[in-house]
Image (tube, rainbow, N blue to C red; front, side):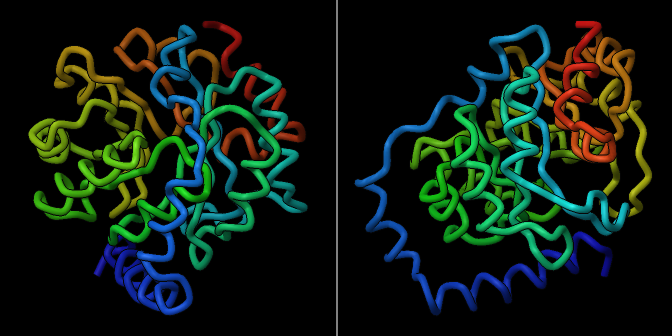
Length: 259
């Protein structure tokens, strides 16, 4: 079992436990009371290169990334320095995230938020809506074709945007076949944790017309951003390289400085 499979197995157990305290029906009952969130793709496309800046304490590959850690303060710095959206990790066991961090960030900023999670159950999609997300991550490598297509429809049904993440040509084809109109190309292989921007350069050529492309992971310099834009990316998702800097907000502004 690779790390992605292990995380998803643990996630299924976690969600079943959470349902005992807050059922899917409990969450659905909240939907009529919720206001509309800002549009995720519209925000990404409103600048020459959209930036989804990430709030993340730790990861299996990097370990502890930032300490002390202020989710709301970091996110506000991102917003003030040109970020189009903020990604917040929902997984606690492997990434140190969770609903408390998400709520703190949501209360600190106005721009769209990505519910960055290993989605394996419809409960998580409705939970994302109740938390104030504008978009939900779906990882192709963690889902069957039927699950992928079904989750895309369920996310759209609650007026959120699916960001469908791929790692190779086979997954790119699966995402396209499922009707994805916003695809994240993860430059980090979640099975080996090897990272290369060549993944975006290769897979971007396969994207259908009108699809919003997001390049994720391993993006460290303004030059990287220029090259990814030239390759066809409309946005980037960056976390670790920003969070390791003294001021993540200023690091975000520097990353976009050549665009």
